[in-house]
Length: 105
Image (cartoon, rainbow, N blue to C red; front, side, top):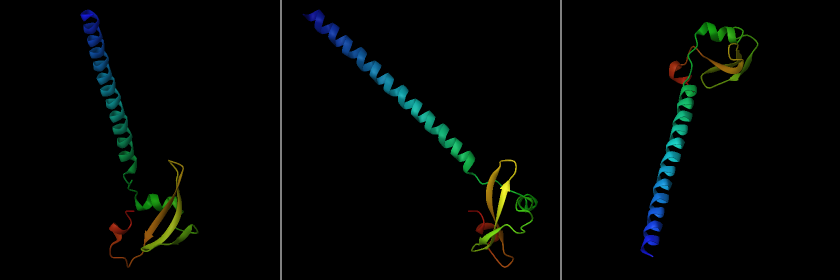
C-alpha cells in the first residue's frame, strides 16, 4: 500500500513538472511569435522618405492627377512603380508655416 502511494506521488510529481515545462515552452513560443510580429510591424510602419523628384515622377509632375485639397495643400494620386502601390501625395502650399510637421501623417 505504501509503495502504491509513493508510486502515485512520483507519477503526480512527474506529470506536474512536465506540465510546467510544457506551459513554459508554449509561453516562450507565443512571446517569440509576438515579438517577431511586432518587429515586422515596426519595420513596415516607419515612414519612407522620398525626394521631390521621386514624388513628381510618381504623380506625373502634379498635373491632372489631383484628388482634392487638404488642410495644408493639394493632394495628388500617384503610383510607386517599384512596389506597384497606389499612393496619395500632399503637396504643401507655399504659405503654410508648419510644412515639415504638417505632412508627416
